[in-house]
Every structure is written in C-alpha cells, then in structure tokens.
Length: 582
Image (cartoon, rainbow, N blue to C red; front, side, top):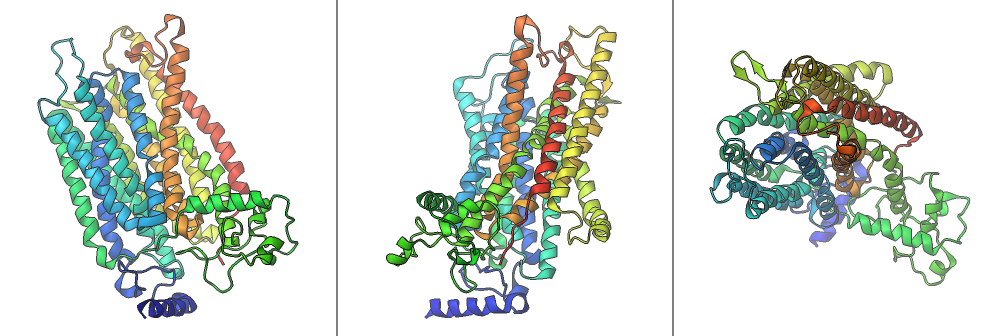
C-alpha cells in the first residue's frame, strides 16, 4: 500500500510540476519519500554541504600545497622526481572520482557514496600524520650536506596514506557539487537561477579552505614541524564529515538510476545488432515509453536530436521485436532517452578534451611555480615568505573574482546577452582558457628576468636564490585564479547542466578527470622535455640547479600549447548543441 501511495503521489507531483508544494524534479528524502519544497533543500541544506566542502578542501590543500617541499626536504627527492610525484598523485586524486561516480549513479546514491569514501579519506589523513610524527616512520634528517635516504618502510607508509587520500577523494569530488546542486529544483525557475549562483559560491568555499592552507598551514609546516602541519588538516577532515551528517534530514536526494556504463553498453550492443536495419524517416517511430515517465529511474525523458543518427538504430523497433513482442530487453531495444544519453556524452567529449591543457597549467601551481619560487628572494624585511604561500594569491584571486563575477559581471552581461546566467557555460570556459595562457606567459617573463640576473650576478653555477623578489610571481598566480573562476566553475556548470539526470555524478567525474589528465599531461611534458634537453650531457631545461637551466622555455612551451588549444576549443564550442529535455 505504501508503494502504491508513493507512486500516486509521484504522479501528482509530475503533473503539477513547479506549481505544487512538492519538488518537481523527482527528488526524495533520505527514506525515499517525496518531499515538500519549503522544508528541505535550497540554501538551508547547502550551508552544510558548503561547510563540508570548505573543511575537506582545507584538509586536501593542507597536504598538496606544500607536498613538493616535503618530498624535496624530508624525503630528499630531486626537483623533477618531486614535481612528477606531486603531479601523479594529484592526477590520481582526479582519476578516482570515476569510481565514486559509478557507485553513486548506479547503486549507493551521492549521499552514501560521500559518507563511505570520507571515512577512507580520514584514515589516509591519519596515516599520513603518523608517518610525519612517529620517529620510526619519519625519514632521517640531513646531517650537514649528507641526506640519508628514507627506508622502504617509511616510503610505503607515507605513500600509502597519500594514496588512501586519493581514493577517498574519489567518492567526494564527483558527488558533493552535484549533490549540492540537487538541492535546487530544476522545474522551479526561481530555484534554477539559484543553482547557477550555487556553483560560484561552492568554488568560493573551496578557495577559503585553500587560503587557510596556503597561509596558516604552510607556515605551520615550515616553522612548527610536519607532524602538527598534517595533524591540523586531519582534524578539519573529521569536521567535514560531521558537518555533512548534520544536514541529513533536510537534504533532497535523487534516486540512483542504475549503471550508466551498462546503459551506454546496451545502446552500443543494440546498435551493432541492428547494423543493417534502416532508420525510419519519422523519428517518432523510434521506441520510447508512453507518458512522461522515463524507463531510467531518476531521469526525465530526452528529446530526439538529429545528430549521430546512426545510434538511433538501437531504438528502431524491428520485425523481430514485434514478432516476439520483446520490448523489455535493453540489449536489443533501447529507448530514445537511453540513446540520447550516449549522444550527449559523445557531444561533450571535445569540450572535455580541450579543458585538459588548462588543468596542465593549473598543475604548475604546486610544482614548477613552487620550484621557481624556491630560487627567488623570499625576504620581505625580516620576514621569510615560504614559496608555497605564494599560491595564496591564486586563492585570493578566486575569492575576489567569485563575488565580482556573481554580483557584477553576471547582471552586466545579462543586459547584453539576455541569458539567465550572463555568460553561457562555454563562453565562460573560453575566457578562462585565454587567461591561463596569459598566466604561463607571465611566468615565462619572470623566469627570463631571473636568469638574466643570475647571469649578471655570476650565480649560474651556484644553487642559490637570485636577488629578484618572489612577489614578482603574484601576477601569474592571480591570472591562474581568474582563469579558474571562469573555466573551472563554467566546466562544473556545463557538465552538470548538460548531463542526463541519471548521469550527473559520472559527468561531474568527467569534469574532474580533466584535472587528472592535465596533471598527467604535465608529468608527460616534464618527462619528455627532460629526456630531450639532457641529451649529450647537457643540464637540460629543468636541472636540480635551476640557475643552470631554462625553465622559461618550459613555460613558453605550455603557453604555446594553451594558445593552440584555445583555437580548437572555440571551434568545438561553436559546433556544440545543447541538451533538450522533454
């Protein structure tokens, strides 16, 4: 009887849409019942989610911001090895979200996926803290100029904790932004506008956490020790978990719609089986359930599009289907909505691919920008600025740009474009790609000047800092931060809005996957550049003594790649057609 009453209520909600007291997007409470708008979701629920994200990001950046320093000064790794390890770990942190996304969309839902992986994350943080605190697990300190290598057990302990964090992040990253956006009803015009603002403030909270990490925590790690420096972010990770559970009763939940990967495979198999079947001239003859309900749990129907029409063969009702009255086997016959899901993924792929180079630029924040800062003069009067703290200007840039974008640029752009959010998601991404190219050019100019001073001061063969203020790095960090506000937030919006309802965690993971791919691309560029430029016994572009190298050429190389990538993105964006829900 309860199931019948629930079905009847859901049907009533579907008819009323945004006009009724219940949400019209199919969201339910933690027990699976339809929920009232005024009691749940909206900014009230989002405050807990934003608090969770702020604390979790503080914990993450508390590790990543100064990781290259720990690897070079405590584990005694070389510049290239340390930069490669940081890039690889960061890449893994943004690759594991595919695991969390599939579990969230298929089985557990976003809430339970976040809850489960947060526990793994916290265990990794505790392990990392122990590796820097317990004498038996700590790497040996240098004695004069002699730095003994860390033991295998110490390496294993440290990297085990580090990669547990990467796994834990895989369940949080793809779910928390989309879970927050789920708190706003798509069918309600007022709530839909708030959703666009949510992504801006979500990224703002991320950077508040990053700001605390890049200032206070980096200072603690450099001046009070790494044990305490890792223990503080561990505490904040525990705080993040607590904040998340507090809001459980007022969250809105979207039902998992089954495995999106299985549905994609079903379309491909059905299409291959009907390779020789002719498409009907009238697309209304393709198979779709009658009424407003989709065959996919938690998803609305999608309208047929005239692109990639060869995939429509999966939805053609063949004579064999009619003869055996077999309309329920999705491996032989798919609905139009299911086919359109795959089309959306294919259409989004070029936009996804052209975002990778931006992530490679962003990866320099915690690798080559940091190593560049280590050979600049970090004295301001009697105060020493830790090189990792300069990345705070990236965060400050974001903190400044988010409210400026949300309160000034959007209303201003809305007057000219007539768009609800001022700029389209693709316009926003494109502006950020341009800014990232300028950031690399700024870094290259600073490095060129630094090498000129090193040569004039006869410091080329000395592994020392050059008398050029580290504050000259501020413009490159500031430009990267401005680029993030446009590209990263625009990307999250794009993948959430354009994704099918039952694939939102997976598509959010695709957005994060660009960060992973960018980190791996950065590692690949470093490896190739080092391999080519060190041939014949030369020191190469990025030697351990950067005064002997040409880091400026590396920055110009990445700037050139960004320039070419921008042209490809503009071409792909002009050809892109948006999703249409029925």
